[in-house]
Length: 210
Image (tube, rainbow, N blue to C red):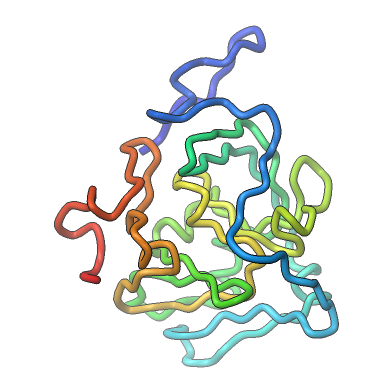
């Protein structure tokens, strides 16, 4: 579901905030567990699973940093009820990555993998949205370690837990499977405009059985 993003004379339009959200002036640090130490010589990004050619694709940090750079101005909605509006995210568009390493025709979902085994599942259509981006920058500056450096996923139309910090790879899947927070009671889809916060709100077809 889309939403208006207009502003008038610098005044916030209430319709920009999803139900139950409040405007955040700044960017709180929210994560579970420690901040991983970045080791560029050991860092690798992988696309694997049901790829179109059956092969795994890998990029080291230098190679990934050389991929085409894109920007998107988009909001960030945290399930803890704060929203940060109008940030500029810079990095590699997820759609561009899917073109470099295409999924097989029967792929329906992806699992985005991050440090320490964290994961988030997405429908393929959410992953390949033209606003989904593997961000390295926010508002023209490199992400800090606490906010996901060297790489975090931003999926503006879903709650922010669907975009893990410290991303290391993408798994193409031919069936849905719950990620880290989805296994722990968060909604399988996570649409902030319909307040899909928790798994008990799921309707038939919203996700796989536990």
